[in-house]
Image 1 (cartoon, rainbow, N blue to C red):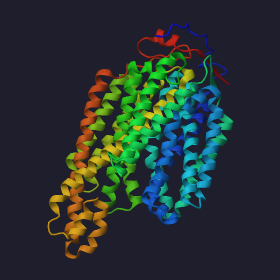
Image 2 (image 1 turned 180 degrees about the horizontal axis):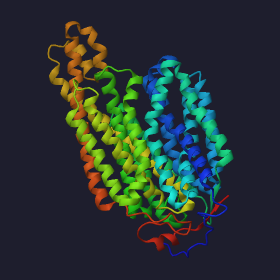
Image 3 (image 1 turned 90 degrees about the vertical axis):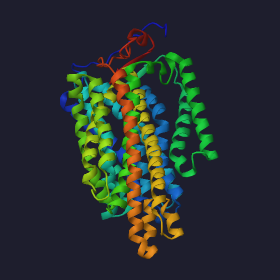
Image 4 (image 1 turned 60 degrees about the vertical axis):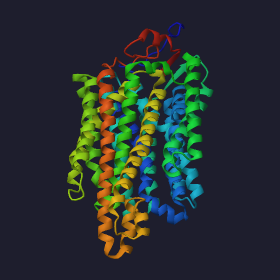
Length: 544
C-alpha cells in the first residue's frame, strides 16, 4: 500500500479540559438527533400527500413521483462530496449551512405555487440534507469519547431507522387535521431548534490535509449515484428494459468503475480510500446496512397496501400500525452497543440479522386476509428487534474503519449505503409483489367483466376502485384481489428471507471483529493492515 511516512497529527483529546463534559455531550446528541430527524422525516413525509399534490398542481403521477424522489436523488448524490468538504472546512460550519438551506427550502416548499417550484425546493432541500446527514454522525464519532460513542451511535441509528416511520405518522396526522402544506412545518420547526442548539453547543472539528480536494472523484461519484438511483427509482415506472433505464444503468456502472479506478490512482489523496473495503469492518458493515435497509424499505412498500387495500384502514391508521416496529427498532438500536460490548460486534450483528430474517419468515407463514393485523404483528416485532441490533454495530464498523479526520466521509458512506439499500429494496420487493399479485389474480377472474378484470390486474388499489362498477361481482373481485395480494406478499417475504439467510452466513463468517478505538488521523483502525492504513493518511485533525 502507501509508502508515505505516517503523518504527524494533533489528536482530539478524549478527556481533559478541552473535552466536552457529560452535560454538553447530551446536548450535542440531542442537537444532531433533531437535525437528523428533520432530514429523515422529509424523505417519507410527502408520500402521504400524493393525491393532494396531484390535485393542487394538476400534476401527473410522474410529476408527483419526481417531487417525492428528487429529494432523495439530490441527497444521495451529494453525500460523499459534501461529507468530505465538511471534514476540510469544518463540520460545525457545514452543519449550520445545511440547516439554513434545508430550512429555507422547506419554507418555500410550503408556499410553492406550482409543481416546478416544488421540485426546485425539493432539490435545494436535498442539498441541505446532504450537508446535514453525514455531519450529524461525524460530530458524534469525532466528539464523543470511546466509552460513550457506541451509545450515541445507537441513538443516531435508531432515529435513522425508525424516524422515517415516525415522520410519516406525524405527516399523516398533519394532513388529516390540517392541510398538506403543513407537512413542511415539522421539518422547519426541527431545523430552527437544531440550528439554535448547534450555535450554542456543537464544537467544530476539521481536517488539515496535505492533499488537494479530489474534485474529479467527487464529480464522478455524483454521476454514478444519480444514474444508479435513477434506475432504481424510475425502472418500475418506465420498465426495466426501456432505453432510458438501460442508458442510465450503463452510465451508472461506467461511472462507478471509473470512480473506483480513479480512487485507486489517487491513493492517499482519494475522496474515499476504496482499499479499505478489503477490511472486514467496512465491507461487512456496508453490506449489512445495504441489505437491512433494503428489506426495511421493501417491507414498507408491502405493508401499507396491506393495511389500506386489504384491511381497509386509513393512511393515518396505517402509519400507526407501523409504529410498534419503529419503536422497538429505536429501542434495540440503543441497546445494541451494550450487547456488542458483552458478546462482540459480529455475534450481535448475527443475532440481529437472524431475527430480522425470522420476522420475514413469520410474516410469510402467517399473513392472511382473515387474520388481519395480528397475523403479521409478531413478524413485524421480530423485524424491528433484528434491524435495531444489526444497524448500530454495522454503523460503528463503518465509521471505525476510517480515521477521525475522515469521519465526514465515513458518515457519508454509511448514509449512501442506506439510500442505495432503500432504493434497491423498494424496487426489488415492490416488483416481486406486483409480479406475484398479477400471477395469482389471473386464475381468480373468471366471470369478471373483461374491462374490470384488466384493470384489476394492474394492482389491488385498481381492483378496489373498479369493483363497485362490476355489480354482483364486486365482492368476488375484491376478495380475489385481496387474496392475490397476500400471495404476492408471501413471494416477496420468502425472497427477502432468502436474502437475509445469505447475509446471515456472510456476517457469521466475515463480520467485523470487536472494533479498536477510533483513532486520530494517524491510524485508520481496521482489524488488519493498521500500520499500512496509518501510512495512507496525511492530514491533521483539529477540534475547537
